[in-house]
Amino acid sequence: MRRTRTGSNRIPADQRRAEILRCAAELFAARGFVPTTMDDVAEAANITKRTLYRYVPSKEDLLFEIHDTFSGHALVPSDRQDITDPTGEFRRVVRQTAQMVADHPTEIGVFFEERKHLGPAQARLIEERRDAYEAYAASVVQAGIDAGAFADLPARTVAQTVLGTVTEMYRWYHPDGPLSPAELADQYGDLFLHGAAAGRALVTTRATARPISTPAAGNSQDHRERVRLAAVKSFAEHGYHATSMRDLADVADVTKGAVMYHAGYKNDLLEQIHRSTFQESLSLLHEELANDDDSTPALDSLHRLITVYMRFVAANRDAIAVINDNMRYLDTKSYRRIDRLRNDWLAIFRAVLDRAEANGEIVGVSPSFLARALVGMFNSAARWYNPRGRLRPDALAQLFSQLLFHGLAAGVTVR
Image 1 (cartoon, rainbow, N blue to C red):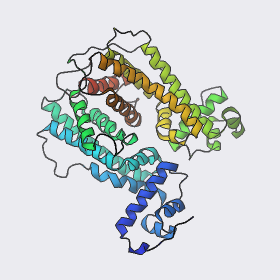
Image 2 (cartoon, one colour):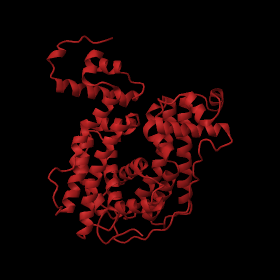
Image 3 (cartoon, helix red, strand yellow):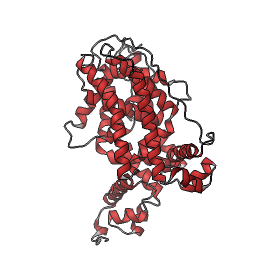
Image 4 (cartoon, one colour):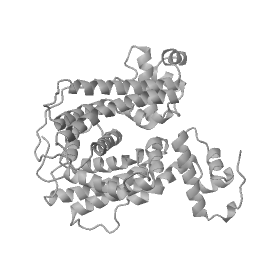
């Protein structure tokens, strides 16, 4: 039932716009961008559709303006000068990013999970803003390297990792939690500057398990697998709701009837993608730990797990993108089944981190916080890492281990 609208003309325009964006963000977060209509937004904001169009001309503009609600927090300093205190400025950037997430977790989640629906010009403008902020963060890291305060690591990759990891707070941050944004930022700052390892020298061994690259959708001779791979590609590129069964048939080069016969409905396919991706990664992680025992240093095990998983990310970016952006669209029973698999996956890393704490290999950082930081690294890397570039998965895993174990501290490297 539509609420009675009273006194709408007395609300200042800036407050009305903010309310529209808040309602749109909540609807996009709950239902997704594609299923949400402008009628839904008008209803939630308690205004007419005609009034809504006076503020925003389209859903795409709503999505773009939702980004604007938090992008102002991440502006490059207007009075850029030489960075004389890289460590202090690094902490400031981390604090600024953490506060941005704490202030706008819903908006950030909507942006990351729905930005594929932006038009080219809007997407390009947002990429320019992101690139400018990453470039500034990289300049802070480079200033620390030049001053001899930070280890000689690829500054841009460090910046992407740090900013991405902190931004992933949006998935779990709650304002009623035990730590304030400033306290969380201090924990991230300490971790990325000094690491969690008790020792200051660490030699790691090479991971052994290697994932099999995911084949292209049209290459499999098995119709069921062709449909699944078509769903991976289409859901990652266009989104779950924007992909029709006809779209899947076209990508898989089969009939629409064949899609239904071999895969069932779209939600069945979405669950299959989640299940197969988690099961394959679980198998690889268990395989890597198969020969470890109580005498194996836990941080050595952790580094090898990070390496194996980053190889998996490189080979399965689309499937991981589907999981990161679309798990909320599973039906209730499917979600519970997949959530159990996700917990099994996380438990592997938590067990190794708990062993590291029990052995005295990590100090000053709780295993739960380290696990969140590591998952944040994985999730953010799945968005920005290009496995076809010069940085190989093993090298990125090495950098992740460096930041987790020793931070940016000069003279200490994982090897």
